[in-house]
Figure 1 (spheres, rainbow over the protein chains, first blue to last red):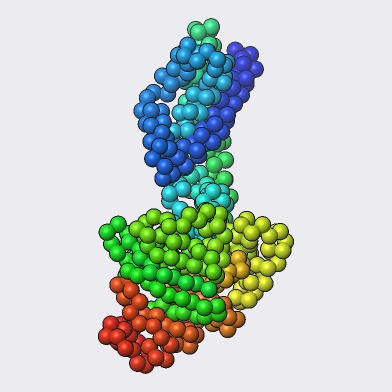
Figure 2: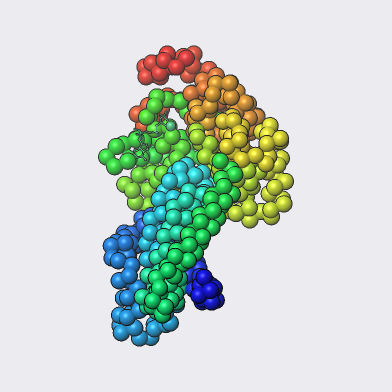
Length: 215
Length: 250
Ligand SMILES: Nc1ncnc2c1ncn2[C@@H]1O[C@H](COP(=O)(O)OP(=O)(O)OP(=O)(O)O)[C@@H](O)[C@H]1O
Ligand SMILES: [Mg+2]
């Protein structure tokens, strides 16, 4: 117990790292995912093809490999773009979740009745205005549950970046286990993961309720 | 106000409109009747660019909206121009298509504020007045899901009017309503007609056509078969197909 208490500051830092990784990555993922989703929906065959390929690649290869690729291979190909482990991790996680989020966003946008776009056009709105004011706000309600899922997945997937040396929750458990020879440290770390996922599940439930007022 | 010349519309190999000529003058109310699948909705949707015509010419208030032959533009019209002409044409849909995430007031204000850049408080004041005019002064802050079909359709009419359109198109505005709610919507439309709004109304409400229309058009299989005053068409239809249709619906 004392041993665990003594490690509290480290665990605290690691929790912060996991949260920072999750939140930066989901923001990157959402922004890129929205762009990809609009590309998938667009009538332009080049955009459609490009976004389809992107999603195909990122969903079709293991995330850990994508992280390694960005961290070890990219600096060789494009040394100018080399950055620190944290940025690399956020980019890798963001690029990967963007592929999943794009499909979520696309499905949500396409689930909105076509009449909404027609009514917008009939009122003289152009497509981008109609998207921004009418279609996307309505899709947010529909995408919240699956985005919540993706967020939880991403939170857990941040553990993969322990492989490139970032001291997040899983890494700290590993470190403590090897320095003390006692695997008991995995237990409090698992509890922290559970607490985090529970909090965020709750937050997404609340958001969903908030966006349901008009239904 | 609206001039349609030789309008053709095909979906793939399916010819839906086969040469429609129609002129609607300012302040005129034209009712369009005809069997299901005759192309009535498609005609309205072509007028405000929800569908592109295959061939023909559309003019709105003296300005060319579209001029095409075999799916190619004869006249290049900028997207901006098309949108501004679309805004001159109000449309009311069978299924209302209100914005569910906005209150009645926000629905009505949305396009004036976002498209016409009317200041918010002015748009709100105008929207309020429009909602009062359609009898919904007490529903201003309700979301559409809290309104009956008839109330929703009246909000939709107010929303279209908020853009101060020169023409209003109605596509079976009462077909999705319970019978007891039809009257309140028709009353609002009657009021518009009395205020000299130019209107094209696709409807199955023959009573409305008889009372309000200046002219009734009977369409079948993508063509205008017969057009005349409501008295003439209802009491003395000339064409066999008109007779057959009217005997089924009257
Ligand atoms: N987007 C579309 N793609 C393919 N075919 C279409 C499309 N829209 C309409 N049609 C076809 O065009 C024909 C005319 O349809 P339209 O909706 O204009 O008829 P309508 O006279 O309004 O009928 P109703 O009284 O049932 O509303 C129908 O055969 C319909 O299936
Ligand atoms: Mg129709």
